[in-house]
Length: 638
Image 1 (cartoon, one colour):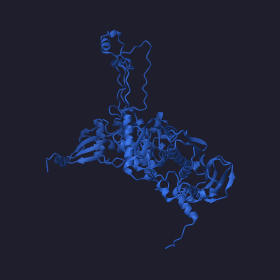
Image 2: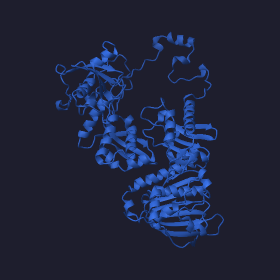
Image 3: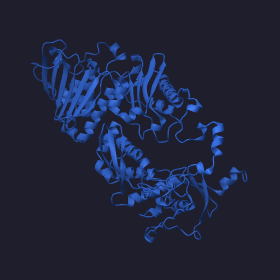
Image 4: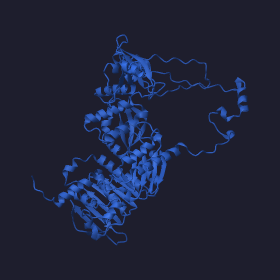
């Protein structure tokens, strides 16, 4: 057995650095927290090459005394704690005294600082944690820390770093969250000489939200306020109709500290129960404030995980505050209505008239009335008649009542000036649709030879089928069609056909989701998505898969981004399957949509023949009820 010995200070510092400094974003977080604890009112973050080669954080805080500069880079050196009792009531963002030591041990670092009111400042250079001499320097009041060549002395860490764009996006997320938590501080983020973010620092939370998260998200917010004794909750939550495909836009702060909390997430989402669509998640910028001794922030080195003394009280506070905000939004204060005679109705509806006026209008001679204008609509066509390959998807309606026609512009020919509309003119029948090639048609099994019978459909979701052995089957048509689409996509070796949108769509993602998507713009093009950076964690969508409805495109990309950011897919094959499963789900018929008999037959034949058993996500597509089970339900047998 090897002998026990104490690690050298250098190795110990590298181990400590690994706990605190995972990537450039970790460096930015620690330096920004120090700047805010120093009383800064304006902070600038500048990065190059994703922060790997150059990273600068400057503030106008209180500065550091020249004599204390070497001490500041020693482990467990801090100005924020004095006694053990202080650990029970931590009110600063940083307090461990490890950040500067950890950062300097894995980089080449320069610090320039000047105390308020001092005639001059001081500078110190450190390389691999080894300090040089403190020297005088001319610099503005506050502190600037420049970090170069991160992980230069730990090359094993470099191979775990992601693309520069991904690292820069992670830094942007950190700056964004801290800007939200401190709207009274002006934050500026510069990436490769381009300004990405600049908050006003006017102390108004909504201004910070607008600058950091964008106009669209800000307009979807509802104010939230709640109190329970010494505990308060305030901020904003999104309206139920503005639900997101992931939890990426949920931001929680506890005593102005950004945290990840399953408790707070559960409390918020519980308030949206029965209000938000299934598969959608609310967004928020939510602050919980409570006495310092009621929360433990010393759980994780990064201080992003906290524990509450009274979890139920915190849960109830957030839950009821969110419920009240949503109830107020659903029931706005009643506004005094205008008198009926003053009400304006652009359609000239009869309710704007008095009873006498209405009767007089009804008794007018027909010749005095304006001739009615008839609008003709495009006659219903099946998707198979629009051309292209005849697939199972072609036999499926995409709206409850009629097929969907995408990217088809209906052009009405101009009418001569002396030509008047003729309501009696017959509508010409549409030209006969071209028959698709026989090899491309879906072949149905002849009814005379199949050992099952389609009995019908219930709840516009489940197909009822009876087989020759007197078993009754319930088939989930969405799950079955999802598998059909998935198998078809997977069998294709060429890129999925896409359609160009007349008007591009914008998907606003969380920082992690955006980073995951930005790394795979080229790969997404093979799956029908043409995306590009739109700034501020937004993605511009120009092309979408041909089978995907335009209204589902943003939700599909959000779901893909959430899966990628969560690391559910690692190897390329798994990434491809995850993308195809999401596309198949969004392109399939949904529960509640009406289907005709032929559509049901296509799906039943594939399910009952054994071709389909599970949807791409592993859910069964059918369940069986035997004759005996049914008879037992009705007490026909014991």
